[in-house]
Amino acid sequence: MIKVLVIDDQTIVRAGFAALLAAQPDITVVGEGGDGNDAVRLAERERPDVVVMDIRMPGMDGIEATRRILAQPWAENVRVLVLTTFDVDEYVYDALACGASGFLLKDATADELVSAVRVVARGDSLLAPQVTGRLIREFTRQRRHRPQAPAELATLTARENEVLVLIAGGLSNGEIAARLFVSEHTVKTHVARVFTKLGLRDRAQAVMLAYESGVVVPGAAGE
Image (cartoon, rainbow, N blue to C red; front, top):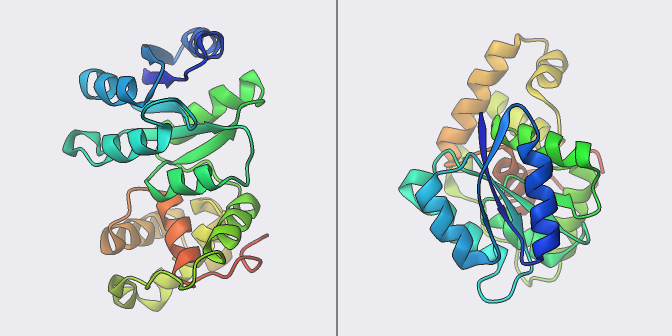
């Protein structure tokens, strides 16, 4: 069973999401909350697999709650799926930078919400490369300086760097395997090494790092 925590300050929206998810045979809703404080408290108590997190809430917002939850040692396997009204949104950018595994628009269909929870629960990221590219292009160009690329990038082999670029392009392990003419098992090994060397928890963080460090330029990875 996938344990899900639903956080949204709008009671009707929260109840609707919770009821929809609880009706699925492989999902159980372990808690509901109306702000970031609830999210942090309930996440520590319930240890969910996925937190469906509204971004804009009074008091502690979803960004700070995401940051606090994912900083905890017990949250290594917790995934955060953020909800937003607009895809190209500074709040979404900040949530992804804090470690969220993806985002979903609030007007998504019921099937899209359920699918999104399952995707992030299995450790994949829910990021459209085109949208991610637009997000990062928009908000990195507002900064005077590009964030310094982590020194750990230099530890990647040529093949590992190639895999990182393809991850940023939105390719799955199977698609990367086909592109590089290797087995999917080999790709999984490369991905695991990239994550370990760069200290990444999932593909969403890999995409963010690849764009922000200049490994991939927005527009060159499928945008």
